[in-house]
Image (cartoon, rainbow, N blue to C red; front, side, top):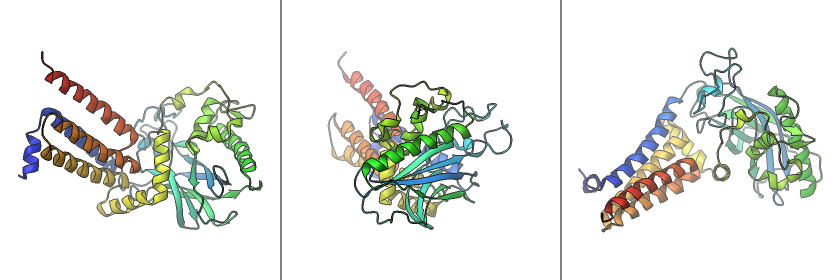
Length: 364
């Protein structure tokens, strides 16, 4: 047995527990990925797509898509969770009458994306924020080289080809607005179009009038969809937001989705091509991109932990080793290996274990 492993097995119980916790989190992610691997993708649809320019700075592009990932396929309600509802981490409400998932934003990682394409050529992507009818967006920084009005640009809703076989894909040719190319005009166009898109969601979801829009302004419930297009949109087009509103359908938004930080990281990561690289690597081993990235960062984190533990002495040795492990995990957050929420849980876990360890070493 290698000396590093023997030393690790002789480490205090706190160290062993810390490593066990990280291993459990990694293998749980892998198990989830295997469970959904290579099954037929449920249907989906792209119902509208539009693009806007000069939204943040000169030369940028923000494209928005209205899509649907159905919550059931046969009858409403089904006997067991169906379609994309079956792929939620939290399936509560998936067999209610009518079907109404209470946590529609808990879709398994790497299941579905919205992808901007030029013909069949990949341009950019982001994760689908929720199942059922929803809105999503892709932001592209200046220097993208795309021509405004290009008739070959399409926005697609797609299942992950690594996870599903056969896959599902539906695309919509982008509508290029006719507003002048100034930030004020483009933001105004985005605001008015956003209100109409959210009204469409209200209609197709069969909700009462004024559920999502009141007096041409988004209610609290409607604002959730805007946030899922682009974090911080309320600061860009504040005129279409209500200062306060009543959520007439609170159950649909009772569970929070990915944080704004995670959304920002996902968007940035997709733009660098790193996520696509992990997806390609994972396909070699029959894993999703998230699973292979988690496995890699898990192995690197454990190696860092062992090396630091071996080469440091004293009471602070275990602390430095855990810090090294967490540092590797924090780097992995960029590609959801693990996600921000998992890092938060790990931080709380290590804080509790560390507190117990310190308390036990205090003189009685």
